[in-house]
Length: 368
Length: 194
Image (cartoon, rainbow over all chains, first blue to last red):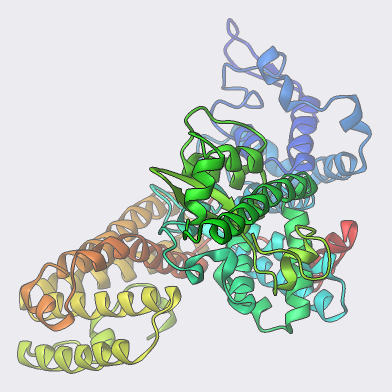
């Protein structure tokens, strides 16, 4: 690989081909679609007609560090970059005065690495450019379904997360882009209308309906959820349990706080029963919450989120909860207390899901 | 429809009429099809997917009526469509022959195909929702329009993708994919942490 020099003597620029090769291999190894495209852009430090240089501190991130250079994925990528055909193409594209045509071998390798690293947006963009995104989704769905048939739920969930992670939003503005998890928005849509009856609460839906809602919400894809909904209920529950944990590795933190919130609600329920018996007066749960929690009924959502938001509205707590623990919003509902609307924990005692997720202990659990 | 025409919305095909229909025939077929569609919508339980499907079907019929009942509008639409199909073919041939003109034709085609799909999918379908004849037959209202924005943009990009699939590669060299290797790779990725 010969060094390239700019023709202009005064502003002569040398591009070290070794740096170009290593930067390209790093982008491939990292599954970084943005950096990969940048290396071929008009402002790339790899172009001799660009004023930018790899030696500049601002491009440190493009070059591999010591750990990266010994990684097998980096070495594999570097080998492909250095192969005669690919390197010849890279040199040709960096010298051409037109939009570059990226080498497909490297782009495919980049996309696969991105999938391995969970960088689904990057993988989706690379597969989309190769025009194989939809078919790759189908391949991952196929493998995931096969794993589910064999009872390998972890593999199956991983396959579904990859396949749905490769989804594209063709209605995006101004140009289509990968669809990304936006649980904060979806949670608000899920709780968009105030529940007037228990059936209106997501958490209190019939188990079959709840599973459908939960799978659709967590997979971010109604079509993928429908594939799982065709399976037996125990398979759906096992899938949902694994899905919750893979989406949220910190789920146990929420479980602990949810149980505390349930204890608070249960205590209020007992007081309500007692006061009704003693006074013969039909106070509502909302009235009891208002009385017990004084002027701030937001103690319950603060307990659920583990953080107090000054003057926080229910939807602020909901968004925070959805961001930290996406599945948590499936087990809460809106509740009007006096003039303040807040969030309270909710679940169906006859549903297997809360028990499987550790939200309740004992045989039947308690319905707060 | 021939493969080379896939993706270029064909309102004659949507309405099920010939390429040069009389306005009376267009109206008659439109009313029959819309009545059947509205009847079907009233009979089924509306889910999120069905709502999107029926809304799109309704928008397509409305747009077909608006563009086909008017001779001048129909001729303009038909000429633009035919011109675009011819331009695609011209670019494909230039690209296949390695001609220097290929890149210029690609840019020209890309701009025109986006313009065609915006005009005859999104804009026409939304405008048709305000047409009195369409509103009377389909009961299209502001709620339909609100949902339609996203659905129509999605449909437009779907058509663009259908066209893109058969075009020469521009931003990347033509890949050679071994789908058996892809399946094995997917299985190995699932097994890595599975």
